[in-house]
Image (cartoon, rainbow, N blue to C red):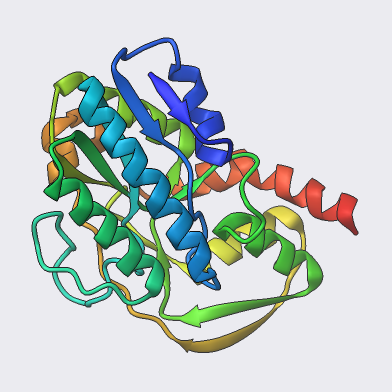
Length: 252
């Protein structure tokens, strides 16, 4: 496996670099969902186009990371499916859907993974858990009313990706999520208890919440059923929040 990129996901997938020959992981590009300059989208698209051409020539399999967040699944009701209609709510969601379409129109062997909110070490400060920890420690946190977040441990993402590749599934899109999104207030409650801080909460707007279907993931990789459940998000937060608390304290 060749991992292309230098950020959060690239660092975690480096553990698989010695396995899965002929697989290329595109672990680069836009990693936050808002406030993204158009130039950043253009840069990621151009790099992906070049990689698609390369993988076509060399007959390599390309792994691409898309999103299963509310940026993609933004219509309340039945769970969002990979083969169902989607109405992306942000430029970030529309960008990812466009790149999925480019892959589908190409001849490359690809696996596009729509990711829920992945949590792990050394994340961008604007991603969910680092951002919430920083805000809580400052004494004030801003939330979207009605927001829910489906958290996935990055170590589980790496494991599930490896298992999906082992199935040989080709030219398809798979949601990687638990299927059990947690109200953001419960995430904040847990972080406040762990940090020993109670922050003022300000609600800025209503948020659309659409559950994510994990039927395809669990059909392909039955072991995926082990992630999720009532305590899973607490375990994920407990595993990583201390790093961001320490980073915030050091910066302060």
